[in-house]
Length: 163
Image (cartoon, rainbow, N blue to C red):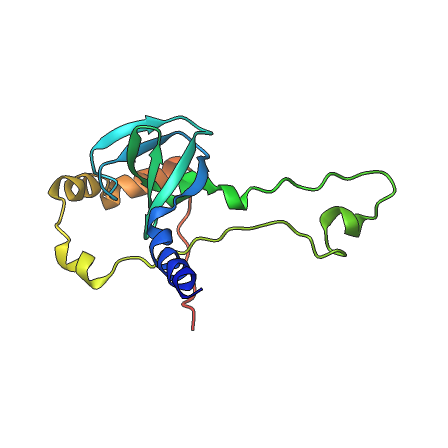
């Protein structure tokens, strides 16, 4: 009995890293070599591809589908556990039964939170001069803004400061 308990304990500790979670792509996905938007694309998966979620890292998930393996955004997949079919309305049922309010059966919902940037990410950040220059190129002069407003028949008005 003791060996059995130790075996179960060992499986409980090891299994989360070994057992993949089934999921499906909800849009065409480009698998990346690393969990980053600018990483090299290693494979492309079409919509409704069955995948295994191997690991999560912030808003990124490591996926495996056949021989394809890489990182994608969490919002590009739906976990198989979250897939529930909506109840079909049938004759004789009340509105409350149809939407599941009376029985308490409302189906599953998934919420994903992303914490944002951590201290290490901020320390490693490197400015992208090309993107900065592109952003600066979008700026307009005061004269350009006034000409745009005039062409759109816009008028200047004073807005009271909020307190």
